[in-house]
Length: 355
Ligand code: NAP
Ligand code: ZN
Image (cartoon, rainbow, N blue to C red; front, side, top):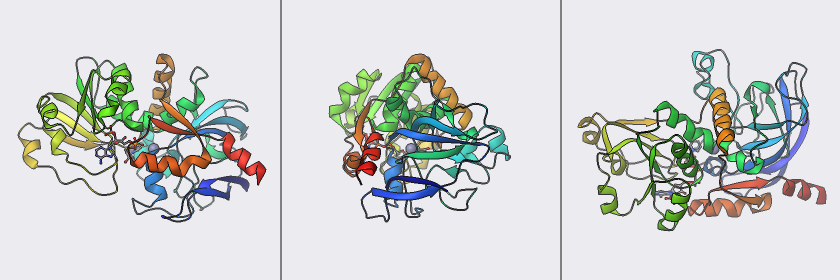
């Protein structure tokens, strides 16, 4: 087994701290990566604190991974030692069901294997994520990351980037479309940049009035403070598409009424407590849709990374040492993220050396 170390939680109430664990040795189809940077997703916090009720401890979060390839198996063809590589939320799937055949591994009919808190297919043990020194992943699930992109700022593309890119593409966001993004956090700020790059007219909804200027800088054509009823009312019946990235329960009706006829509100935020059920009349009177979307498949993740490399799109990040992770979680709960924390894994190696 491969000896690894990283930051993880041993219970829903314990802070994250250094722990040691084992991964499988790389097999013929595997790529071993030395992790350089890992983004901090709100899903990491939901999982570390068992807010979705499915966490098995110990858990090592992290699914926005960028690193250098240190070893490849004999059947690996796309990667060699020294390459920059990325790993997102998925490290395995059945690869033969109809969803996998279409490149939609996130909807694998036999259940995809999450990068952390997932059931490892090879060893029967658990998967451990990217707040760690290394990771071993089957080649199919490893992404190519252009050298043109700053690796630390590119890390959040692996979850926040693809989770917003995929629904924007699926619902055909582009020129001539009026698009709303709800919440200016990690996902929201990527959704904003991507929808802007796709040519849409983008309106950013925030509960934090002090984020107005940043939203404009990041590509918003208009900014609405969602607590202001008058500002909201001005947009009634006008949106083609709204992407809701909020990590807490809130009224969906507030956004459904902003859709025009046949518009769609798509949820990607996955709060601990359910949203109150929306009014059916807000859907039927204008044939509106309420939908959801889960990350994105491997092929589309590569497409998104290439799209970002061509346009120089990365995340706006705050680089932190891993020892600040618990503090970062508290700030995330206060919506005080500008706009993604990324862990510099050198800090983990330094701590391990000192110990
Ligand atoms: P984040 O960085 O914490 O951003 C969430 C944003 O939501 C906040 O910055 C804030 O923006 C807004 N917000 C927070 N509390 C709110 C409240 N009570 N009412 C209204 N707005 C509130 O989180 P993230 O990493 O972007 O993740 C967002 C959600 O998406 C999480 O639930 C995460 O688990 C989920 N997620 C889903 C997928 C998927 O595949 N569907 C993938 C990744 C993550 P403002 O300050 O602008 O209001
Ligand atoms: Zn995530």
